[in-house]
Length: 300
Image 1: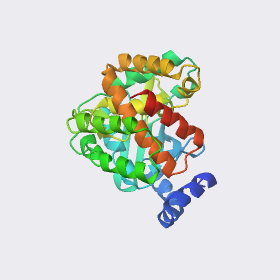
Image 2 (image 1 turned 135 degrees about the vertical axis):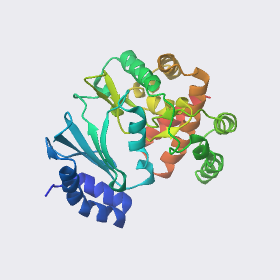
Image 3 (image 1 turned 90 degrees about the vertical axis):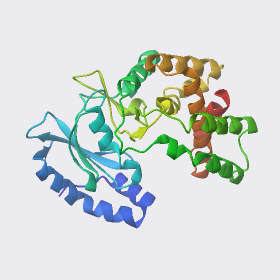
Image 4 (image 1 turned 120 degrees about the vertical axis):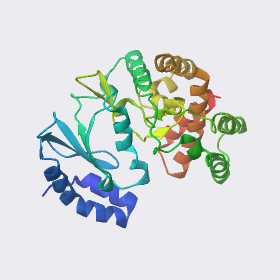
């Protein structure tokens, strides 16, 4: 029987309660079942992220692959559909899926991720180029960002009040203006939803391949915050002139992605406001909250 990493089990049960405990208890059998169903055998230790486990496998009819099984949560509902829509163009290939069990058989990366690239310009340009590569027409079953963000004005106003209005009024006002002006009318484009260094793997058939999509539909500029609210950008925000470095990185990303810079700036500012409030609510480290506050103000 497959042994589930203790740290992953502890984190899942702590976050999900009884539902997490039941799922963790059933996970070894589920992994055994999908190994048999997809004619695979393990080819390395079981790994994990925050919400799922990944097992390197050798499959009878496919190149080296991984089996990914995620906790059954609405946030994980559309990952397989996004991979299907990309069909390997800029993302790992999906070989098999079992939506009921949140299980997928996926192409394995060739080793390493974009987070290991030391050169700032190269990495940010690669993220922009990948965003453009992933810009395909979205299938109808995926969730529309326009509907998701329709609830954000009330959420932001309520949370800011509950937290004692920690952000300047002009910062909140800018975020709410973006929601009014950019939120309702968005393109029918597939959006990764969590594009950053660690979600981009080295590939053999393409230089970089995306993993872990959320599978939204809307404005690609929505992803800008996950690019710039990352460890790669953090040193810029502690520099003598954080605004200058941030703007240069933003310009570089937008040029490579062919995204309108002002739209990217506004979406990033809005999402920084929301992330700063969420971080306070959920006890994120102070330095993360400070960086996010700084982003929300610089990007106004």
